[in-house]
Amino acid sequence: MDKQFIEEMRETLETQRQELMGILLSTNAAFRQMVEESSKTGDTIDEAADVIDRTMLETLNAKDAGRLQLIDSALTRIRQGKYGVCLKCGKEIPIARIRAIPHAVLCVDCKSAEERRNR
Ligand SMILES: [Zn+2]
Image (tube, rainbow, N blue to C red):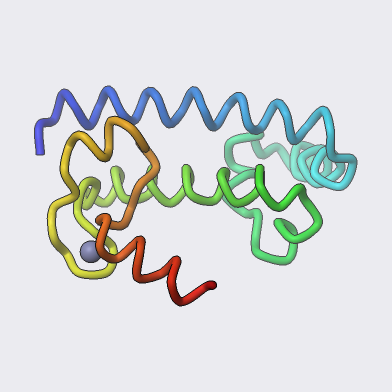
């Protein structure tokens, strides 16, 4: 996949992440407390977000937290050089899909299979 395109998506994801963090910080006391706790130990907000685990996310607004998790995993995929490749089947995710949903880590087939399973 095109490096410049990935870089563009990384910036989009980082921006979305910052916005989401801002929303979570202003609307969720538990999240704010967690970030404050970790800032005492000298971690930045960015690092604090990295240590958010499932338990923590359950206390957050499920929709926002879920999105934050998706964005984080997409950013992780970029760091690992695996961005744009389906997490499940390893096929390349079409650029049009990524452009529409920058945090997509599954191809359309795997995504709809997963949605069917969750239903
Ligand atoms: Zn797939």
